[in-house]
Amino acid sequence: MSDNMIDLVLLVDDNDTDNFISKRIIEITHFAKDVEIKNSGKGALEYLEQNKDKEEMLPDFIFLDINMPIVDGFVFLYEFEKFSELVKNKCKVIILSSSDNKRDIDKIVNNENVVKFITKPLTEAALMDIKKMF
Figure (cartoon, rainbow, N blue to C red):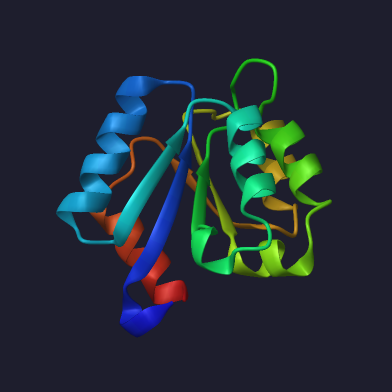
């Protein structure tokens, strides 16, 4: 990440309102230069697959919702595991979910590709915490 500015964030959520709010917070706080939005886990996996050899097109952070139709957060993480080390090292996965199901949370925070769990909505304070981690 160049001089503490994050180049690209990928928002993965089937809820357009949540995506809009998250994108605005990221823009207002100047957390990242660009925000890519995918409305499904499948769309996000396809995006990563298309850009797996182009490091500059890979997101620094993936904000991932758990509860989505067809390809949910768990399936996404299972498939994400199959990507190259380049992809897994570049893309830090942050769960951004309204789920308060303890079993879901335990299952997800124990995933080695997940660096943080945030409860919706995304806030400036949460983004500052992420910046401090990296």
